Length: 89
Image 1: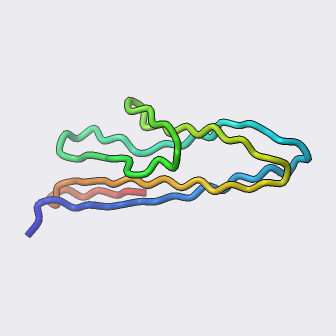
Image 2 (image 1 turned 30 degrees about the vertical axis):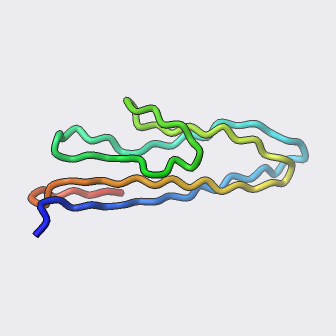
């Protein structure tokens, strides 16, 4: 019997440039932060983004050509004790 539960979440964000000119943009998202010392959140795949550890914010710098679409995927894992109830969304 394990004393920990592990949940892995992946998200995919699609961005599209509908303009006739190239654009540069910053895309922001965030992973959850744990205030419980027994629970931990680890970013396992940042999808070429940069993680700010203190806030959990991931930043991507994206260059999109005219009419181009890009997909950004990131994954994180939450590990917590089995004796607590946790909702991860």
